[in-house]
Length: 489
Image (cartoon, rainbow, N blue to C red; front, side, top):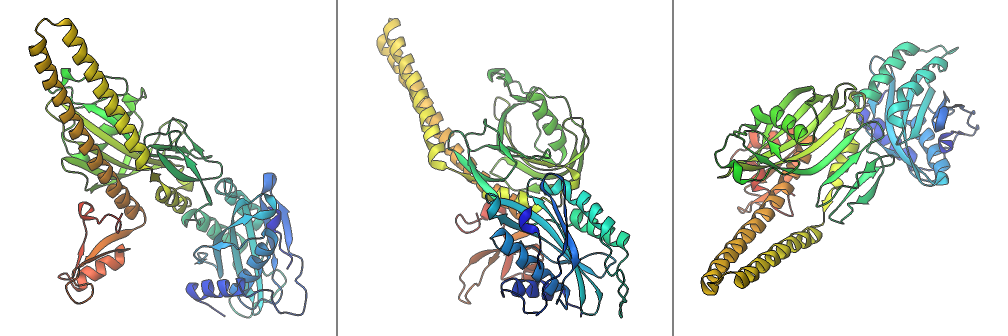
């Protein structure tokens, strides 16, 4: 990335982060000497490596601020900085950032910036960066190349602690790249073919053209999968009334018994069979129950699976199944996220951003439902007219047809009501799933303003637990079914 080329005491992580932001927005640095040219390596296909001493910087925060100002000046946009972290077993600190490269057509870029103090008032910095679509696969090779040529402190005597060994610094920085979530990638909005939903996806990701009716299917450049709002009809083959339900293509055949914590692996494999796929190796690390609509059983499951024979990958799924009805039929819904193990932690912020950007256009969905109901009613009316023409006893047949029509209308109304209840349940569960990924909890304050007023709010899990323990009569955890629309979801 051309815009990354740079011309240019001990702090807590919070202090360093604050100092970086202050320096970044403070404008040009004041030292009289010119910044020594930092060394630059152009990595194949667009990546960039920059390293060297930062003139005039007397702290790691100051060095990072200088480099990020240079990024700002060359890219024409302000870098968005993530959480500063200390590189394990070294005296270095590092931070991930994102920036939009204006001169290269507003291309989103992700980078990792490292600063190390090799002597008092002698700070060296290094930066690796690439396009947001490639960074996940190129960061570790670029770090390996960086630490083969960058040896902080060579020829410099450190009056304090010795500088980190290059190998140790490389290992620690590699761990940081793989063990800390990078800032969320820049997303652009895409829409389902029928206009029923929109979602934000990063550059290099693809929306499946079969996305419709609120369901969104996305794939990433490294094999990532994000499938949201999928639904299938299920049939219990052991139910005596199951022959009344037609086995349409894609129907899930499994004798579901209601215990999702136990049944999730089998239901997932039955889902694959309904797709014409063989069983997939599946390792479930944890399953947590999740509240859904009445007579519906939901879980969030995490672990690893191998869907294509290329090796185990990290998955996080939200699955719900309704109780079987009088004919053994039930509904299964699934939201599924799959990513390579090497990118699972790094891409967590991006996946959360994708999930949070999913919006269903209920006006379009309403029109689809209304159109389907209108067609059903038209078919019913046509059947009634045909019966009236062909049956001798017009009055009796008319009465029977009217009865069938009324029953159909009642079934349609019930189906419509159930659909809306399911959409509301999906919205609640979607928010609860997002809260789970973000480690957040909805809490209720039973005395919000000191006058008995009840209020809701979303807080980090640790904060919510502390509030409830401190005053359980005033604060309580809010279950998914009690979320307030417009406040909690």
